[in-house]
Image (cartoon, rainbow, N blue to C red; front, side, top):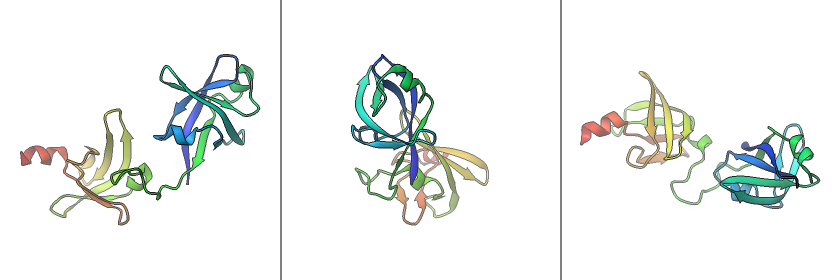
Length: 167
């Protein structure tokens, strides 16, 4: 599946490096030297340099050796082909697209709603679940989402208001 992994920002220095707005949790793999990223307007780009500077990813690309060349790529979105069904690093490692569309059930077995979105926050991801009573946000942590069955597109959730009542 073709997924958005980053956006090219402004030029950095005069040697043809660009700042990158990272939109992947695997920048070391997606933006490794020798990797190719796809773009809509500039074809595939071969990555020739990769380094972090003050927390910002800087990339260089084949055949772009100056600031002016990078500026022509500014705001270009970069994509990679990703197998979202490939196993992750850990047992609780899921891709956002695997979670969207899952049916959420309460521990009692009662249907709670459907996962509409996964919001990536610095502390943890949050599930946005559409229920009969509107949207409910549930932090995607084991205490509130004890079971996830990707194959059958379902999960068990303990909404925060219910987990407070249990204590």
